[in-house]
Image (cartoon, rainbow, N blue to C red; front, top):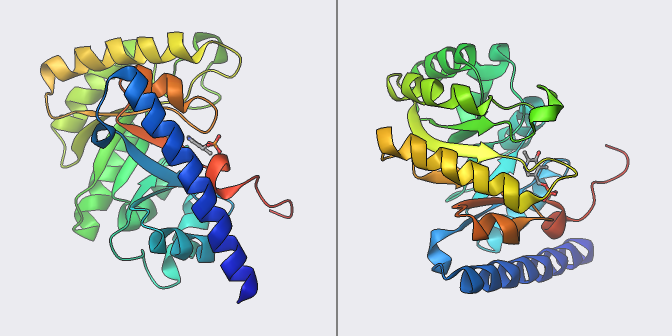
Length: 236
Ligand SMILES: *Cc1c(COP(=O)(O)O)cnc(C)c1O
């Protein structure tokens, strides 16, 4: 009980710090705070943290591994009022399982996955929003996932004509490059997608280390793990 209390205090303090950073970033970018949503990434951390976060008012959580997330959410279902985002690389054969619990899949990067997710969402009779993950690291190959920027307009058309809802774009900044330049490219690509699909308003970019840059370049969703949950527990 005391341990749980300590963890709650820790999460509350970290959330307050991150909230302060987001508010400051919005102010310097001249953007209203309401334009930016915080998604707390709970991968590697136990179900009890999810419940504590929900109790602290967190409404969006992110997970990156299907099995881990499904197991966590099976214990008592998704906490009330919480939307779940899948942000990890996804094999088509796991799409059905993800479609059972995710509200948003942010890592859609190929046509096979669109077909599989649409089928899964239909089978589960659920509304599923898809973001196209964009590879912003031309040198990296397909290692971290993501569609090539040139392929994004066609993928957007395909999602829009499926039973999935096209939400927008998602990206991870390249490891050792300037996040501002990468997020700027993402913003330009987003403008292009918006011209054909005005409903695709979401831009998911920015993590613990680069959320300020993401806010500067128009991110609507930030995916923050470490700065709130801490470093992953070593035995996982
Ligand atoms: C883990 C993860 C995050 C969170 O990263 P932190 O640096 O811990 O904030 C964001 N996006 C994706 C895709 C992730 O896998």
